[in-house]
Image (cartoon, rainbow, N blue to C red; front, side, top):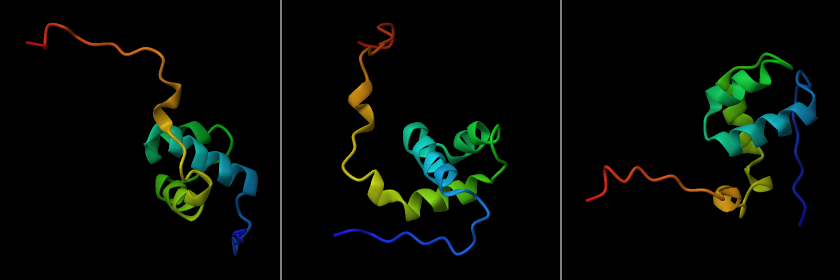
Length: 79
């Protein structure tokens, strides 16, 4: 079952839309993704959030925490 993706206006190249959604997926912040993407193209954080919502099927079942290798704990707070 394939999903058809349609963007009515091609204002932003499709590869940048996917990259912006991936940055949001990895950072959990649409504002941070907007700042990172601003070096290539200037788009608002709400547009990146809507890109992610429309492309969320690409990231379904992916674990963000799978790349964690080190966990830092402040032992002064543990009792």
